[in-house]
Length: 195
Image (cartoon, rainbow, N blue to C red; front, top):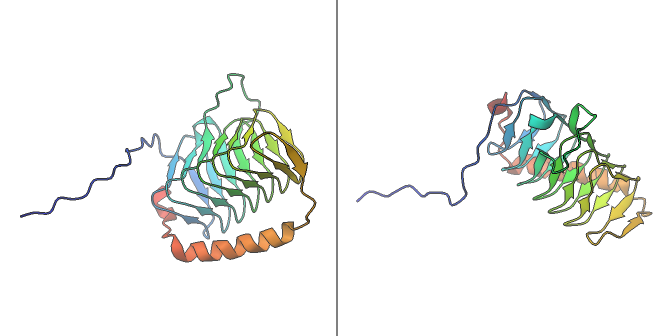
């Protein structure tokens, strides 16, 4: 009697062309992350890319800053639903200390995520949108293409907004660094697979 191999119920994902990459030596990137496209993907030091995160540079260059965390099932560099042409060669720029949580979609086309931003579960950020420093998007928030969000803004999923006056940005950065150290022990990393 032979044991059959278990089959995954998750459908296979088409990966497309292998993307050119520029990685720091200290990044953590899971084997099952998906990198595709024909523009460069730059990931800076001590950033983390979780399993099944998709970085697609088909629509422009992707740049991820220092100590960022990209959670599983995110889609960075997704094709936009907005048909107007983009003026930027950059697809998506994510500044230092940003966290992109599970299931978030960041459309390519000059999209900028500011330093220390927290993009909640299931959010969608349209192409050309610019988020200022230390912005927070609560789960399932939608930012329209080309929208500009000022520094320290909290955006709720129902569209209301407020200014975050807590002054905890330095504490958040220290907590992010500690979380990355924990993830370094939990996520098996193999950056050479993508180079």
